[in-house]
Length: 318
Image (tube, rainbow, N blue to C red):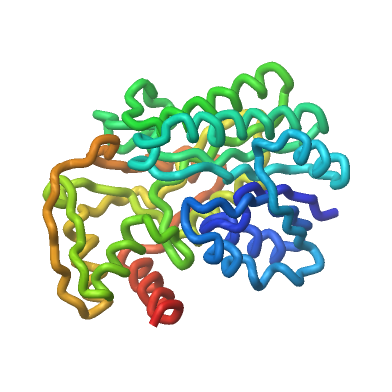
């Protein structure tokens, strides 16, 4: 029998792709999203437009901070598994409104853990972030590395939510898997994220901001590879585990800009700026644990992923 899965943040970039994949695999999906204005809500509506008429898909517009709504959802649906992706994202905005990240990313997660406890949910998957590693001096980043170096409120909120997940597993034996995503990109990527932003600016002939001389490095992970990891985690429950989901390869910012420029056939107008507070120098995932225990195997090279993204962008915005 297929499981009823609650996906929070299901109309977002990763969430909408995940809902499609779950439906494709025969699951019944309850999608909870509040369509906030962090970016244009119309983008989220478009993300799930193909799912709205699906028989095994239910959209609920609401907030994970609304405990009464969560109570209603769990009473009316036999939710067996939760994939919790809803969050206020973004490192730099978290420096401006840190309390918002406490409310949504920490309190919202606790609300869902409480619902999981109360209604006997069989599996809880939490979408965390590579930002919890902060400016880790050891690369690649391993799940066993000490985590005392978060350098943004967003990273601290995600780490705090991870700790609540561990506490709820310890107290109530809820099976929980924490997935640390490394810079996910691909079609439907949020407009504020680097690859989307740079593509848009270059296409419009506008200046591209390049922080820290473009020397920072990121482990960019194509959305299809992230979905593979999430599905494998769903199908391989653990009592409590943490996994890195990344490409396990890094690319410098300057090189990334060159790749996008080549795909677009546009010469970028670069504006060099100082390093931004909250930005880390590098992200780099050690995925040996995910390979061994989940069978996770990313297979999209950054060159191929950028090509796919630019093709989607041109089809969507040209």
